[in-house]
Each structure stands twice: as C-alpha cells, then as structure tokens.
Image 1 (cartoon, rainbow, N blue to C red):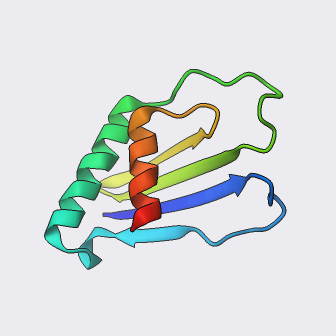
Image 2: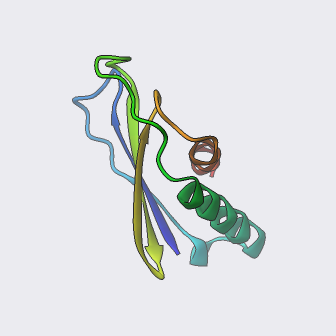
Image 3: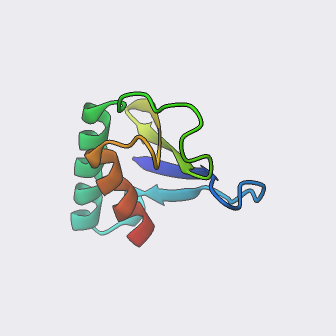
Amino acid sequence: MKVTLAKHGGLAAGIRRPPQVVDTDALPAPLAEELARLVAAAVAAGTPPGERPGRARDAMSYTLTVEGDGRTALTQSDTAMTPAFAALLAWLEQH
C-alpha cells in the first residue's frame, strides 16, 4: 500500500511542497501494520461535517491518497477533521 499526503494552504499557501509518500513495502512489518490500521480507521470514519465559509482562512488542508486494492482519497482540514484522520496525520508526520 502506498500512502501519499499533500498539504495545501496555511500561512505559506503560495509555496508548493512536494507530497510525502510512505510505502508499506519499505516499512518494517509492525509499522506497516500500524499504518494499515490507521488508514482503515480514517477511511471508515469518512468525512467530518462541513466547515463554515470564512472560518480560519489560514488553515491547512490535507489530501490523503491511498493506493493498494484500488484508490481512495480523503481531504480534510485543520477546521474539520475526524479524530481518526488526525491520528493518521500525526503518524505520517512522525515517520
């Protein structure tokens, strides 16, 4: 499974950052299993309720693309994020 995280917006919105890519084939088995569990939880949690327009204009948005048995994309932001997506985001930022 390959997980790609792209970040958009924030205070440096004009600066394009390359996406972060994590491939479970390159991880030790325990980390690959943990990532798979976090991805499954984030996908199952779905999308949070919509955010109000004009709220936190400098907030970051995150697009997570999961490739494996098909392709899944999730987009959430600092102002509207499920706890499962937040846990996955924290894991990706640490690894």
